[in-house]
Length: 267
Image (cartoon, rainbow, N blue to C red; front, side, top):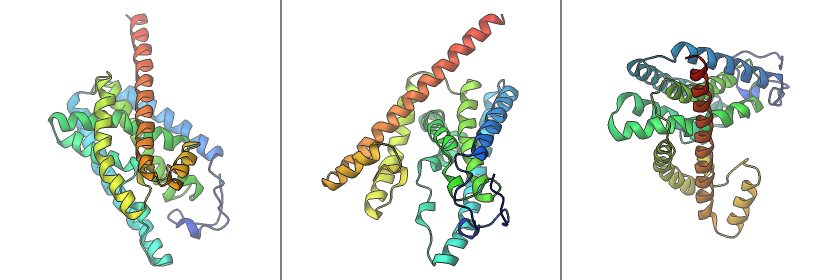
């Protein structure tokens, strides 16, 4: 892990001699190991929780993440404005991992179809974003392990995976193919808003404009853009999201299979 002369709440550009050393290093593997152990322990403790208790947990996490996001954005924006004189638009809550804030609040406080669709997104889209970020935690490119910037990202994406698995393990969400369709429908509605914002302001939230950092597909998006066919980029990204949702569904089917075998041997 990077060891330097900086305080826990230091801004990324003020941390001397840090150039992403913790990205892909022991620090990242340590985070993954601790997260996996903690998730397993929490799921074992909470596996028999009632729907009411799970709903309360979702409400708490939704509120916590809203507050946590505001604190982090305020903290980082203070330095952005102080150093560059402008707000970093990349901090706006329009990326894939921000959706969990809205989904948790809808799931926790709403009822009916809108809740069902939010629940479905939490176990599909939330799992996709959480796993991807945990495996390739980009925060380590800018912040060392022992810093608020890194801790924010570590906690945030840990919660995305934890919430998804909690809803599945407790039976709060029944796993069948409708969760893919409902989760993707929830994702699609939010995507329409984000795509409009991306094209108007030339952003790349949810990767709809440039498919940034996605191997091979980023090159395809670049070629489409050079051919004045950039409107196809969101369709390509939506396709990739749909594929990812289906992969998560297969993952849950494997978990269910192991659970059936486990129960068989213990009866």
